Length: 98
Image 1 (cartoon, one colour):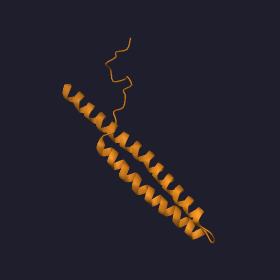
Image 2 (spheres, rainbow, N blue to C red):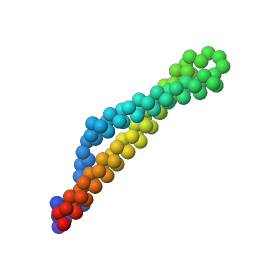
Image 3 (cartoon, rainbow, N blue to C red):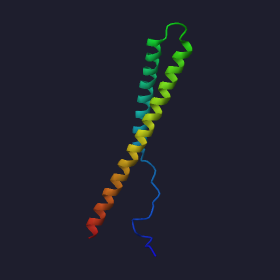
Image 4 (spheres, helix red, strand yellow):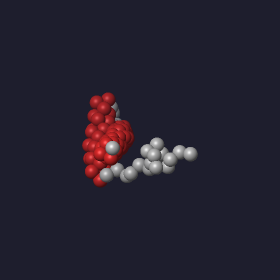
């Protein structure tokens, strides 16, 4: 029967620290702003007649795709950094115990 105290069992991930949440929020806001600007610029360059609806659509899609893409990457990076630090602390604790 496997030992329940071994490190092989699946652990629930701790929530992200506040610092990571702030970094993610700032990164998403910057990327969404940049995405909106890029979407608006593309429509401004390509549109020749009535451009109100395409301009709004290009800006909106740029904001959504820029923000969501950055959100996904930022959360993955934050989780991996947190997991790496937790693993490093666990390794140091195991070394000091031996």
